Image (cartoon, rainbow, N blue to C red; front, top):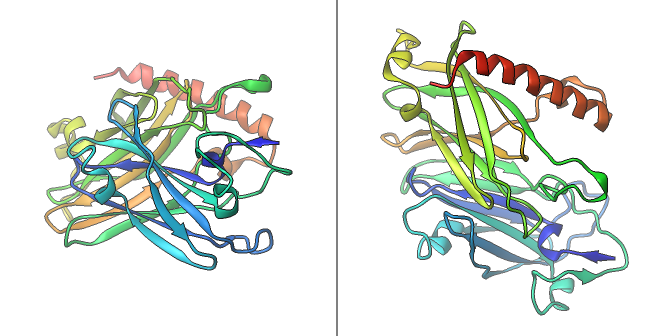
Amino acid sequence: MLVSPLNMISTPLAVLNTVGLDLRVGLSSEDPMVVRNQSEPFEAYLSIYSPEGLLIQRPHLGQIPANRRRFFDVSSITRDLVPNADHLAVIHRIPSNLASQMSDPAEDIEISENPDYSMYRSLVEYSYPSGGNGSVVYETPPRFNAGSSGGQRTSNTFTFTCQTVLSELVNTHVVLINSSMDPAYSTIVNFTYGLHSSSGELVWTGNISVGPFAISILDLARVIPDQVVSKERDPEDGVSAFTLVGYSEEASLIVLFVNAAPALGAVAVEHTHPPQAYMFPFGASYQRTAKEDAQRAWKSILSSGGSR
C-alpha cells in the first residue's frame, strides 16, 4: 500500500512571533500505548511555511534514537526565514528504516501494511526568553482536512472554552491553525465566534478567516472593546473572564488558547477538546449529526447577537 511518510506522525505548529514567544517541540521514539510498536529510531523533519501559506523549506532536524526523547528549538530554526510574522510549521517523524529508502520525504512509498502510529503526540512548548514556559500535547487528527475522497464529507469545527481571561497583566490569544495532510489543500476557513460573560450574556461576536497552511490569532485584548472588559472586571482580582464558543463550516481547525503575561514572563497553553466527545456515545455518524445540529443552533444564536 502507498503511504505518505510525512503524514505517518506529524503535528502542525503555530509559530507566534508577534506574541514574543519562543517555540520548542518535544518528540519521543516510544509507543505511548506500549503494546503496539517496539521503540525504533525516527528521523525528524520540519515543514516551514510562509505567513501566506507557501512551503519555504523542509529541513532534516536529525534522528531521535530508539528509547529516547528529544527537544527541537523550532523558533531558532524558523526565525531566519520568517523573523517577525506568525506562521505555520509542521513537524514530522519518519521511521529511520523507511527514511533510508526515500529520495524525497514528500513522495509516497510502498509498504506491506498500514502502520498504527496514532497517539504519537508532540509536546508543544511556548516560553518567553528568560521566562517561564507553558506546554500542551497533541497530534494531527486522523485524515486531517484530507478532502472528501471515497464519499467522506468535509470536516468542520465546533468548540468552546471558559479559559479566556483579561487583566492588566494577562491576555488571551486564541490561535487558529488551518493545516491539512493533503499538500494540494486550498481551503480558506471562516471562524465565527461569540464571547459570553460570566452571567451567560452574549457580549461580543466576530469572524476571522484563516488561509490554507497558515494561522490566525485572535488577540482578545484588541478584539473586545474596553467598555465590555471593564464591565466584566472582577473587583477582587481585576480579571475579566469570558466563555468562547466558535465554529467553522468549511474545514477543521486546531484551536489553542495561550494565556500570556509578558510582564511576568509567564505563559499557559491549552487546546480545546471537541465538546461532543464529552457527551455522546461512540458512533461517528451520530456524533457528526449532533455536531452539525449544534453548529446550526449556535449559528442562529451568534447571528442574532450581531457581528460588531
